[in-house]
Amino acid sequence: MMDKKTATPHYSVLVMDDDESILDLLIFTLEDEGCEVFSAKNGIEGMALFKQQSIDLVVTDIIMPGREGIEIVREIKQFHPETKLIAMSGFDGIGQNDYLEYASVFGADQTFRKPFDIHEFMASVRELLEKK
Image (cartoon, rainbow, N blue to C red; front, side, top):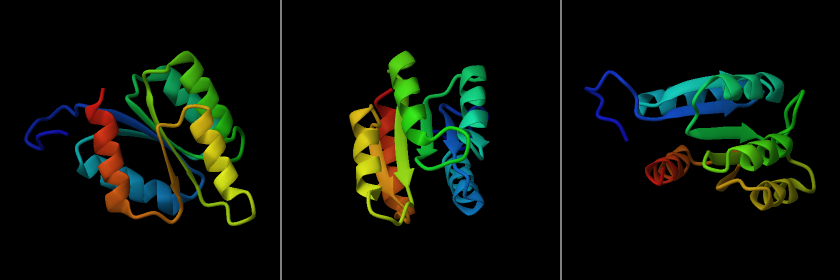
């Protein structure tokens, strides 16, 4: 991804999640990988950031206050199809897999069910960004 000796990150990532512990984990891990990371605790704030920044990869939770991840996936893929997108869900009720399927149908490049293995997640991030 990035030579850690280089001062400028090669990729920018926007992470949207209302779970602060997941948000912190992803920010730390992505920054450690050399990415420039933007974060938001809800979909409204996240989409505002998306419109202000040049983003290579969006990581979004599906169930969030304000705007849900399915709406975000649809909008980003409709207007910015080149942006890579990972959707994740920690919804424990019946239908969690349906949410992730919908995210895939609407254009998510990868989906993860929470809790997920951070190493598998980062392998997907690397793969998606290297395709840019």
